[in-house]
Length: 150
Image (tube, rainbow, N blue to C red; front, side):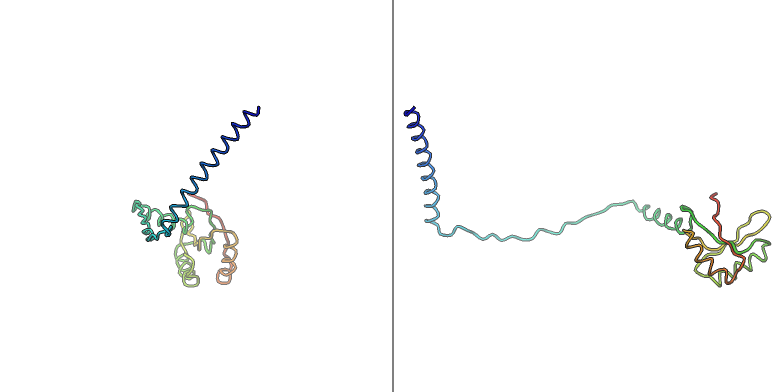
């Protein structure tokens, strides 16, 4: 067992000696050349360029969708009816509504046997009620409704 310990000790001593020699060899090169660090000039990377190729019809579709949203074709919408009756009075009411409320579009819709004057295109019941309050000052018989999808 002592022989085994001696072999282990000798082996350990050999590794230590090899390590010390290696470390001193590294130190000797640094003593020969005192400048260990060198300067390197680095330029910033070039700005990346992104190119997006898209079909030009996409913008046309977006414009169509925006118009349909605004007109209430795609969503639930509310309108306000101002009049129902003959065409002559319907035109008069529509013209008065367009002058009094230029922010909302007024239309004449024919449903047998009457012409109806509708104004606005509101996205919510709250928006409709706010407009109705203002419109009733000029047209007291106005009422809100939700048109049927065709």
